Length: 286
Image 1: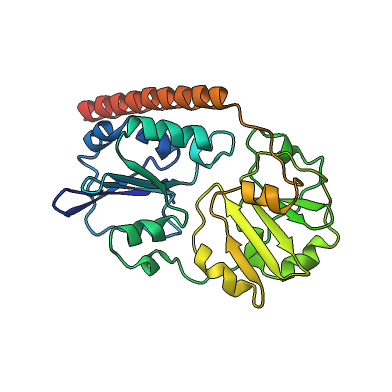
Image 2: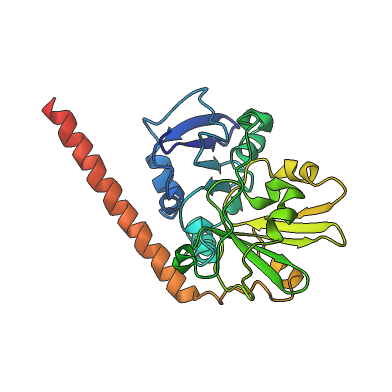
C-alpha cells in the first residue's frame, strides 16, 4: 500500500492546500525541523483532491498558519513509543514556538474534521475484527524496548497482555471477557506498552487508551452495550490509577529520551538528503 500521508496547509486567508507524502513512517521526525523546513519541503507534493482514508493513511499533518496550530498523527515514530512520546511532544513545542501542537487521536478522521471536511470520508468500510494474540509472560515480543502490546487489567490483580498488530482488544466487545478467562496472567506489568485497557465487569465499566492513533474510536461504545466506556486518549496514567498500580511502566528517562529522539531526527535528515541526491543522479542519467 505504500507509506502515505496527507499534509494540509491552511494559509492565513483560509486557503487549504493538500499535499501527499510518501514518507509517512516516522514523519514526526520531519516535524522536528520546524515550520519553515516543513513548508520548504512541500513543493512538488501537491495532490488536489486526493484525500486518504483510514486504510491508506499511515500519517497526516495539518499546518494551520492562521491559527498557528500543528496537528498530526503517525503510525510509526517516537510519538507512538511510550518511552519517547513525551520527549517528542516537548521537542515539537520548542521548535514550533508560539504554536499549539495537537495529536490527532482518530487519525485521518480528525484531520478531515479539523480542516472542515466530513470525517466520515475517512471510513474504510465494514471490516472483520481480528482478535490479537494473548501473550505469555515469557513471550519474546515482550523483550523489545518498545513492545507493540496492549496491557489489559481487571480488578482483583488480574492482568493480561496482547499484541497490538491489528485490532485493539476493546473492539472485540464483551466476547473479550471469555477469551481472557484462560489467558496467561502477568502480575504487575512494567512494559512501556503501546496501549491499554482496564475492565471492570461487575460495574460494567471500561477505560482504554492508545499511544498510537486509532481510527473509529468513537464507534467503540456501541460495541459494549450496557457498559460505560471511556476513551482516555493517550493518558496511560488513567490505567495506572484505575488498576491500582497493576500497570506500572518504568519512569521515563527524560534526558535519554530527548537525546534518542534528536539522534533519530538527525539520521532522518541525513537519510532523506542521501535519497534526494540518489534520485537527482538517477534523473540526470536519463
